[in-house]
Every structure is written in C-alpha cells, then in structure tokens.
Image (tube, rainbow, N blue to C red; front, side, top):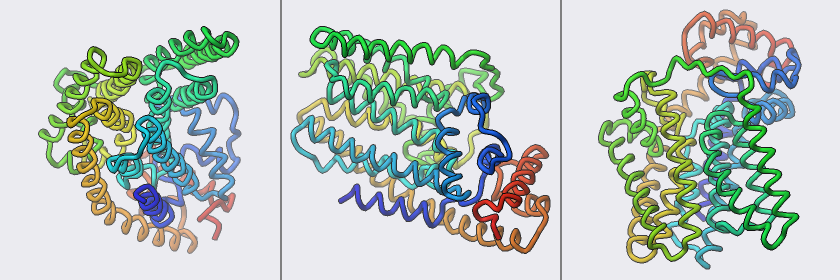
Length: 425
C-alpha cells in the first residue's frame, strides 16, 4: 500500500512539475537531442566536469528524442527505476526473513521522496539511478551473500558496469563490490566451474573497462576541499542530505547526528562480523558499507571547497541512498529487540522526512508550473532567444554568467529550429 501510494504521488509530481524544457546542464545535450550535433562515441565518452556521463547520455538523449523533445521523459524513467528498486527491496527482505514487516515501508518512503531532484530535473538521473543501482547490488549481496547463482551474478555485473558509466559516484562504490563478486565467482567455480569462470571473466572485463575510463581523464577539480575543516563539514553536510532541507536547517547538529548514525552502524557491522548469526551476510554488509561510506568521503573531498547552500541536499540525497539503505540492512540483521527498536526509529524518522519533503517542494512545484507557462507564452509570441534567456535565466540555468547565457540562448534557438517539445508553437 505504501509503495503504491508513494509511486502515485511521485508520478503525479513528475507529470505536474517535471521540467518539460531543458534546465542547467541539460542545455549541453540539446544539440544531440535535436540532431544538430552527432551522437558519436567520442561525444558519449567526453568528460563532463569530473565525470564521464556514459549511461546518462545513452539513456537521456534517445528517451528525450522518443518523447518529441519533452525533457520529462528522463524523470519518468528515473521514477520507474526507483519504483522497481523499492519493490525489489521489499521483496528481497521478505525472502530473507520469510515475511514482510511494517518497517519495510522504509524502502518506498526513502527511495520515492519528492526531495529527489531527479523527479523534476532529468539530468539528475545520473545520481538517482546510480544510487538505485547500488541499492540493487546490495539486495543481491544480502540475499545470496557469497554463494551467488549465475543469473544474479550477471545482474550484479551489469549493474556495476552501469555504475561505471555514471562517473564518479559509481567509481567510488566499485572496489568493494568487485571484491565481493570475485569471492562469489571463486566459490561458484567449486560447483559450476564454467559458470564461475565466466563470471570471473566478466568481472575482469569490468576491471579493464574501469582502467580504460581513466585514459585521457583530467583530474583537475577547483571545488575540492582545501582544508581538513572543509572536509569535515562536507562529510556532515553530505551525510545529512538523506533528511533533506530540514537537516541543513539544524546544522551543525543535523550533520553530527547523521555522522553518529553512520559510525554507530559501522560499529554494529563490525560486531556482526564477530558475533552475528550469519557470517556471510555480515561480510557482504561490511564490504558494501565500506563502499557507501567511501562514496560520502569522496563527495565531501571533491565538493568540500564550494559554498554549501540550502537546496543542495536535494542534489546529493540520491547518492546517500546506498548508505541509508545499508544502515537499515545492518540494524535489521542485528536481530532481537535492538532490530525492532532501531529499524522502527529509522522508518518513523524517514516518514517525517518524506512529509517534510512534500511540504518543502510544494512552493517549488507551484513556481515551476507558473514559470513554464510564462516562458512558453513569451516563446510562442516570438520573443528572441537572448531576451528569453535574460528574462528567465533563473528558471533556465543555475548561475548568471556569460557562458550560461550563451549556452541557453543557443539551445533555445536550436530547439525552436527543430520544433522540439514545447518549442513547437
């Protein structure tokens, strides 16, 4: 019931408030979407900021083309991925325990929060689907532990390649996931030699692909943390993103609480390795936790030098999904009263976050709808691209500078010429 309700609410949000026209970094893709710029292999592999957005380009460009230039196609795809991930999480934990618990409402509440930027801004598919893919790998890990059948093993390989194609977020997660899959492949060879060898071969190809990712890669990053203080603050900020704007409003206490929960969960994971009833599941939880926390540390270092502003929580919330679901899985494995108490508290808190997210995003949704109507009215009345850019820059781009104005004005002209989406008046 919770899954269906949150799915319907999120679908309504995408339809009613999703951006049908490009925003911010999406203007870089306009040429490929309209066909003015060829979608070559070099273009797909081209570095963008600190990433190679292979998966995003291969999905977003064809989807938006099929939708006739409606940029809500990608948020709709992202929503479908998040819905399926939430359903898979509920199913997996029912298989593990033999029954569904009320606290399993945690999964749709967390994964389908309206605080996720990707539900109205397609380019954020990069982060949201990376978080969802990582959660799906975790589900395979906790269900099959170190004895993974060939089918789920190949599913994990596919998900890991998808993570590689999502750039930095996926790369941070891959090493411990690769270690898990290598152990699983070696164990599979004991009983099914050919299948195990093929899985290890697929993993080896993935390692080679990861190495190829860095050929010609530029590591220049002007936004990285330049002091230990910046790094520590960013850790708290990013960790608290799971709770959205409200955690930012409670800074620094919100960040302290978020980091404390991560540390406490890490302690429980170590305890499970020593005392847990299921040693294999404890091992895979420890490995995944290492990757999820590494991702937070990498983001904190890579973005610690920039000024944090309210609203960035929505940007990074999807990347904290692996850690958030991992926290639930670790405490759920603890058994006994501590499991009931901890998972109940986490679920109740995330329900509050979900409700907060609805109240926080309503003004944003109203503004997006209003600006969309105003922009289309002026655009269809023939207002020149440079005037449209100047009047609606806050709606179309995230900074006010010459580069952004030129990028948007060029994109508007191309969309008009090709009569793409809302630009077909």
